[in-house]
Length: 217
Image (cartoon, rainbow, N blue to C red):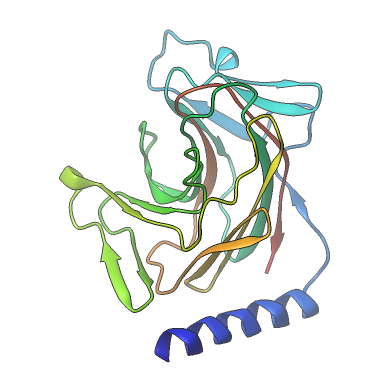
């Protein structure tokens, strides 16, 4: 019952804010360049433009080497929308929200998983990253074991590789909601990290992104 009440309260709060808030979207990727992003690979000998680049209005990543592209601005209380597809073999990647601290291959953040057939999982990275899901608390307590994964609620809702998928991620006042292709895959409360940069990973094989924007709540 407690979980149902929390879910209902979160849904009501989100609908209320959406109905009363501004319709203005903040475009994170303009389809032309990456001026408002920074690229990190951890290898100074790698040309960042070989890892992330724009072509025909689409943001591309090579998947190798590992790293990410990170917004220069920090965000809190928003609904984030993006679309992704695997042009070839699907492997692994992630949408990193509330990225904090220095750059490293796996930064301090909350990850919304993009691994094939696991899109919608929550991954906690770095000491202090924590959430509550269905009355169970999850918290990373040490950087020595910095990674904790919480499976999504439903069966995979991803489309066939080569087709575009949609991610809608709402973060507001410590509550998190993750929707993949219209399917609610996760909700969490008492999120310990609620502000930071947004990042997209290079982690396995080529991946494409488009229509990346957020709506402040």
